[in-house]
Length: 243
Length: 229
Image 1: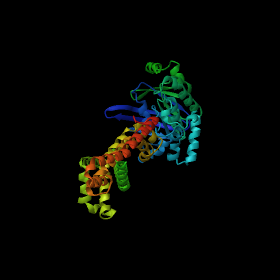
Image 2: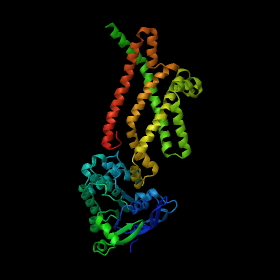
Image 3: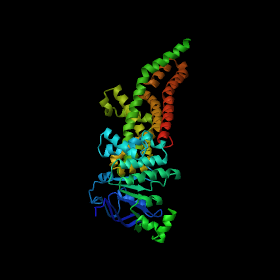
Image 4: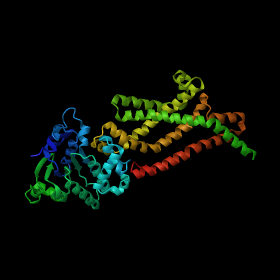
């Protein structure tokens, strides 16, 4: 078996008295798509923020290609440059045009020249079909377009894995399709992805494994076939249906 | 006809001899205020508590001293501090510039601080998630947005500083107010008239700037989806 790209091992996280994650573990292999779902407040978003150490866990370990992010003196900036993140609210840089949003990572973090970074950004915008809006500011784009640029921004770093934090939850229903289509496209290209989402259609179509979380623990995990063939627990079924 | 020529002569006299000093004091005051104000704002947002408290005390202090008192303290009380600028009028000029600048910094720090805080936290998170250090994320993402957000309030500060250069007459700097003062001590009967002319000159240098900057920037900020403009 191949070495996993990402290993999450027994991660615990609490805010003050509130325990949000209580020993979550899973691993992601190269090219895999993992979907995490569950009711709101179950700790899914916190888990993603623990994985890239924006909110470091209190206990447990995160390994990227076998190297620990929790080790003392770990170069977190370097690790984060290899872990892409797509946000629910897009969080595009408001003062930069679409192309510069995508180019700034390669330029400033990976040390590309201006031209190299632009080239990299342009091909990432091609992937998400946004080249025609390359010179628009985020506020001039629809939510769906902003999220596609957000995905391009993550892709342009050519990270080992991309984390998606409910990428379509903030979108008007008619804009969800275009974003899911882009996510399908990049999944088919072999991008390693961890996706927190309620989009069961997407989960069924592309995920290798679905992880059902509730109250800070993994309740059930299995293939989409497992969840969609009626073998799942009653709790997961309920969540899948309202999802 | 003769009166019109007289008025034009006054305007010319005030502008030619006084405007350079007024504008230079404004530029120095705003520049010093920008430099110190930025450092204070950054200290108040990012520095450890001890330094934050010192920055806050500085703001309170310089916001509470009347500008005229500050000018007397600097220009007359502490001329040796400003000896680096030369002797006599040069040192006084520098003292006035620093009075305006340090006072302005106490207000500019508030402008920049609230601008920094109004940048959405998601911007910093997105920058960090790309692998930027906190320093780089602030330089590349937070501060450029904060500067844009700060411009309308900053243009008000410009208007305050340019008007307050007029206090410099009290320590003997030949700026526009001082020259108007010279004119109406020569012809006291025309005092009101000369003051109206002086007011109009100040008006020309404040209103169009604040209006243009305000309108241009709120349009631009709207385009960027930043703040209410």
